[in-house]
Image (cartoon, rainbow over all chains, first blue to last red; front, side, top):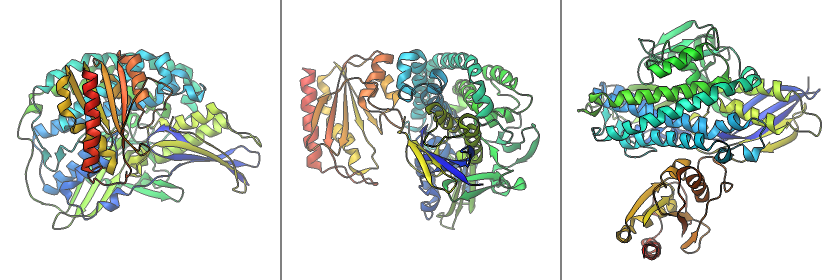
Length: 480
Length: 146
């Protein structure tokens, strides 16, 4: 059958540059949809021949939103190269930084990028579908969102010396003791932060009832899920085994993060700089899986903090097994924000956080190091091979967004088929439906800078092509 | 008067660091104020708006390839000035700060000439250019304080 293709170019309110192609059949119905990432950086390549000790600082530059994740994964790979366990104070500093980073990143995704869709509607006029439109419509919620992100960034600044790209953590631990004087400042933020997330949850949960078509048709499909799992079954973001589960809730495998490459692989495609990850035993595409807030909530037995546990129990009522609706990433993200604040509160009540020593010193003891942690968007792996002088001979980064790549594509295609259905000759998709295409992507809060290790903003282009492959039309949007 | 000076730019993009280097040379002018805070920002984000609370005035300093000389001009709140992606312009920061965080003070944008924004971290503009720009800003600050 001949097909035509539509391309949405550029996707807005996400991190990076991307476009969506829609292929139409002869009846001008949606035949398929593809999400393309159009930027490239190549950190894995230019890190070769760099000393392993430099890697956390270099890797923090992969991303301005989640530099802490890259610093932690890189530092942990360095720990393995040294053959040391960092002192408890260092681990607790790293954990606290990760909680703060997930909080600020989720606040950015939910309040700044996705709440215009949720609060103003998918069909709101495009000029009004942005952060600044919330100034009139939802000023209190907007203020709270900005303050939440500010809180997360402040904790990072207190730990690492600056909000973005701190490099206080490295192989063996961190570079300095965390002063106890910072405890009071962090503590003072907690009540407001908890209140803000509670208000966001109370606003979001009833709103979801009005998004039933989106919940059911914007990335609602069975898939595998992958996340870090603790022995206790509680949500875990720093250490633990890697668990992979199917949509029936059955655990397919538990494995050590150090051996992730035995279980997970990536495949490249000719139309995108972003690779797609899959679970090796099932191959591609059957072995594709989802990571991030939805996967973490599906895999954990409990949150491990009281408020988040209450929300998690309610979240679980939405499905008989794992929750498969991608739109509910938003809800999972807000629940995780609540959990992060509770974890931060617990962390600063732990005297060991302020203790010493903060670094275990050793020389190079291994030729390969792997580090992993839960980044805001999902599980992150760094793997380095070094020569006898500690210079990198190979770097491999497995990024959350590339692990969600196949799922993002499936969500875009499902959205296009349900909401756009067809494009008449000379016509174009309705603006609200184009926004739904983008919103399907935004559910995953993709960071394309990370996933291609590429730099840039994330405006989207949509193009559509005819059965003969000829471009029929396109729409480009700025970085709204 | 309580003044917040925000220098904007990446220290890894050549002359984009000129604002930071210029503002660093202006610190002595802070002596005339009740309080001056200096904030170094890679780029402007909504969170910066929250930090304007409690100040009477704000001075943004930024490298500008379109400026042939140091220009200091008033800037006012405008929620429609730019859409949020990675960063927002000063007028959007002011819109958020006014509507959400109670900042109703005056604001200026100082544009410092710059030309080379290539990757790398060379010293920004020449030392003479930075001294000149710093003198202009310091002079402006003293007028403001008086």
